[in-house]
Image 1 (cartoon, rainbow over the protein chains, first blue to last red):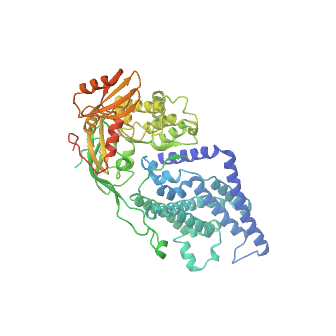
Image 2 (cartoon, rainbow over the protein chains, first blue to last red; image 1 turned 135 degrees about the vertical axis):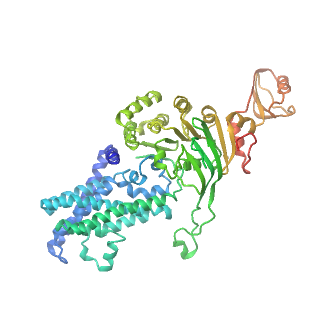
Image 3 (cartoon, rainbow over the protein chains, first blue to last red; image 1 turned 90 degrees about the vertical axis):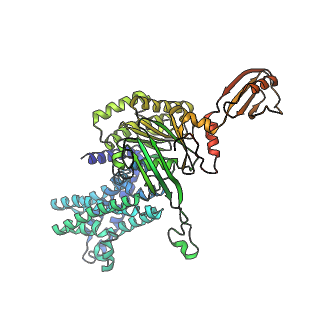
Length: 260
Length: 341
C-alpha cells in the first residue's frame, strides 16, 4: 500500500513537472494524437478499397491500434523512465535511486513521464470508444488488457535497457528493440509467417502486447487470459532480476546532474 | 568479524573497474567490447573505523578513491573484495534497510526536482521514507527553521541560487533524521557565506543529534571547521588517519612568519639559516621556518633589520598548504607514524 502511494505521488509530481510548461505539454500530446490519427486514416482509406485482408477488416485494425496506442501510451506516460535506464547506467546516474529505500528499478521507471504517451493513450481510448463501438464486455476487457499489455512493455523496456550494465552504451539497442516491438504490435497477426510469430511470442513480445489482447477483446478466453497474466508477471519479475543482476556491475560516475 | 557497534567499520575493502574496451582492428571493430585492458584498481585493501557521533573527513587528490569509498559505503557500488559494515549493515547487501538510517549529499548531484518547489520534493521524500504525515510536517518545520528555508520552500528550485539550493538539499537529505550523513563535496561551487552556512549546519547537526558525519572535500576549511579527524587517501590507499591537528604538524614541518613593512622593501638576497621565502610583495613578506619548534627569534630579528616592520604574525601553515603538500606526494603512499594503522 505504501508503495502504491509512493507511485501515485510520483506520477502526480511528474504531471506537475510536465504541466509547468503547459504549452509544450499540450503540443506534444496533440502531435502524438495527430501522428496516430494519420495511421488510422491510412488504414481507413485502405479498407475502403479492400474491405477484407486475410480475414481482417477495419474494426480489427482499429482494435489493434486502440490497444497498441493505449498500452504504449500508459507505459511511457506513467513509466517513461524505463526507456532512460540505459542512458542513466552509461552516465553513472543511478546513484540517486540507489541511496533511497525503494526498489531502484521501480523508482526509475516512474521517474519520468512522456507527454507523448498521454497523447497515445488518449488517442487509443477515443479510437476504441468511437470507432470500435464496443459492447460493455469489450470495454471492460479493453480496460484490463491494456494495463496488462503496458506492464509487459515496461518489463521489455527494463530488460533491454539493462543490457547497458554489460554492454556499456545500450540506449540505441534498447531504442531499436522498442521500435521493433511497436512496429510489430501495430499489424495484424495473420500477416506474419510461423517463424516470425515464434519470435513475436518470445524475443519481441508483440504477440502478448497486441495479438492476444486483440483476440481477447473480441472473444474472451480464460485460458489465454491466464497465460497473458502469467507472461506479464513473469516479464516483470524477470526484468527486475536482470536489472538487479546488472547492478552488481554498475560503475557509477562523476557527472554533474540535476533532476526532472 | 566486523564491529556492529561502530558507525562505519571497513576491512580490506577493494574495488577495481574494468577499462573500456579498445576497438579491435578490421572487422573486429564491429564487435562490442573490443580488447579489454587490465582493470583499474580504484581501492587497494583499505581498512578504517568510524565511531558513532564522530566527524571524519576523507581527503585526497582526484582519483585517490574517496568517492569510490563513499559509494561502497552507501551500497551504490559492490566491492571487488573485503568487508564493510555501516551502522551494523553490509551496505551492498542491505542497501534498502540502510537507506532509512543514512543520508547522502552529493555536491555535484541534486535530489531536488529542478522545475518544482523544494516542498514538492520533501512531500515525495515523505513517501519514499514512509514517514507519517504529522512527523514529516514537524520535521520539515524544524529544518525550515534551522536552515532558514521559509522564503525558499515554495519557489521552483530552478530559481534558487546555488547556496539556497544547497540548504534545500541538506533539508531533503535530513528529512528522515538519519544517524549517519555522507557529504561528498557539499560546498563545491558555493560562495563564502553559503559555505560557512553549510558548515555551521553540519556541525550543529552533529552537536544536537549526535549524527555521524563522513565528509569528502577539497576545501581545507570544510575539514578544519567541521571535522575532528581526517583520513587521507592516496592512490587508493589510506596514507594517514588521525586528528586534524596532527595532520598539519606531520605533513608540513615548520611555521610561517608574515611581516608587513611601512615602506616597500627590496627582495632579500640572503635568508637566515632554516628559512625560505613563500611569498614576496614589496610591503609584505611571508617566510617559512623549517622544522616545527625551531626558534623563530633569529628570523624575526633579521626581518626587523630588513626594514620598518609594522606588523608581524607567526602561525602554523594554513590547511590549504597542508593539503597541497599531501596532493604533491604522487610517488605513492606514505604511511605517517602517529596516525592510526
